[in-house]
Length: 152
Image (cartoon, rainbow, N blue to C red; front, top):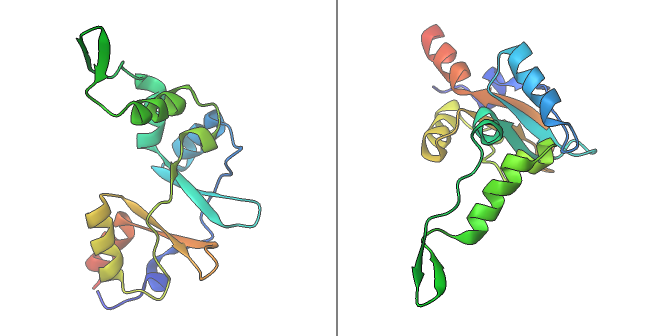
């Protein structure tokens, strides 16, 4: 695992913008048989990631947060702000509504072992690869790591 991320990443990955409709993003994921897409702004800077997990909110909806009544007051047992965020994802129409913001990223000069460790720690299947200006230059997935291990 002494290779760098640049040696095994997919350069110029398929991306979407925050304005892309969720229907379009879902179609890209299905057609390309991938589980997530980097989200970039007009300048190519990474602003988020849209994944199957983000999109499942569309299918499942959101439950009312658990609460208890006490002396004519409602006490939420879950953070109401988090609930509002979940509602926004479930009702969203664009990638910007449903994407995960501030995703973990990796530089192309990092060792694959470091990227694999970060994926494991963050419990993600993919890491966008960015340059010093946060511009997306590639993506590395768990599958890339496994294929590299098999080849060694």
